[in-house]
Image (cartoon, rainbow, N blue to C red):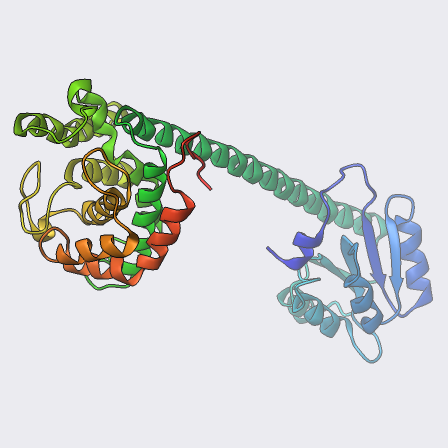
Length: 382
């Protein structure tokens, strides 16, 4: 959009429009002013240079009536300069001139004029043609204002919808955490860890096809759902104090399947999928897989594990190591790094683990900012 349009105020359909009359002959100015002064605001310029100065001032004229034959700067040059300046390019220009050969008219229109009227003028013709151009201009301005209003309305509603979706996602995610006796800060921390890893890996040849700006945002939003399947685990297993038996652990493993099935049901009811739901499904189902194939639920290995799940595996394990658990000591950040390092190429994709080591200070900052509190959990999405 041009500066001329962007700097205009919203159109008032009842306001008088302004015509700039440019002519070096007083009789012509008097004639034209007399024709239009009752219906429009009138500005006068007696030279091309003065016309350029007036046209560039705000509020700009709505239309310019421009003589061709003027000393120093003729009308053609004045028009050329008007159309080469972002402030004045959109102001309609009508030439009024005694130069009435077809070549003269063609030249004027090629320079960007909307009309070319020969002198001596017919007052009724000039009035009608000016009215036509100003009516068209006002319609364009009103349409533009309406489009801007609609754009703002759509943006506002889209923003509110996105905030509501984020809140619903976080609330769903916290259900699993609350049942698991974990702070919902775990959801927030792992979400930010995944984002930090994705940003670190976005230029890596193995990951750049997946880690686009849009997908990183979707990963960030889907990460909180990684343990949503825990809502399907019985309390006696989920809330057991101490280590699980093998049979209980087998039940616990099913949270990955339950999580995937929840997302699949959403896709089924929508009748389609998208990258957000794909990431959510991959993360919930595969974040417990290990690089060497010793994880669950499918025991897949290497690049068969979705990238989103590989990122979540690092985020989830780090947070488990530094968080208070029933049967494991809390590790310091440095101790957690050493444990994680030993899992390179075994539990974790080597390149993802290297990215973790490169941004480990960011992980520590996130962990400290969102450390578990004894009171109300942090659920903000800032």
